Image (cartoon, rainbow, N blue to C red; front, side, top):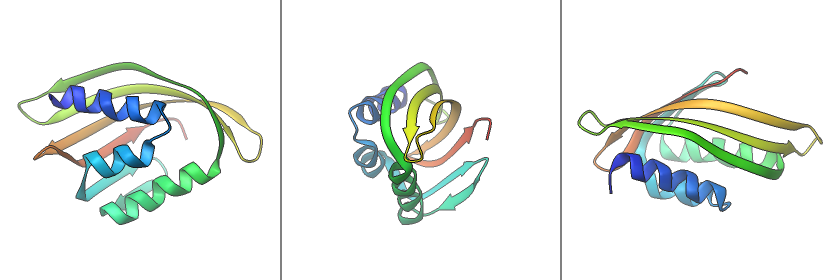
Amino acid sequence: MTLKEKTQDIYNMIGQGKLLDAFDKYYADNIVITEPRGTWSSKSECRKHEEEFLSMVKEFHGLEVKGITSDEASGIVMHETSMDVTFQDGNRVSMEQVGVQKWENGKIVHERFYYQN
């Protein structure tokens, strides 16, 4: 499976409500995730951050993968996605983001998300 296909699998799993399963399957123990709200290091810290995000979500209405591209030789994958989410406070938000992943040995070791905070 190519890195591009693995990233598509991640988003297929997220679309099925299996975000944490995708995280456990594809993220390395030494993962670093960076986004406009901060940086998290280590699989346990990053997983906790994902759990906190999920706890704020009341309902997912949709997920669209707009594009995925990869440089397989350098282990870089970029993806553009949008999500339609209602949070626990009742706010319904359409979120768009671009992510850049660095893969090593079949796992993501760094991922940076770009979005308007």
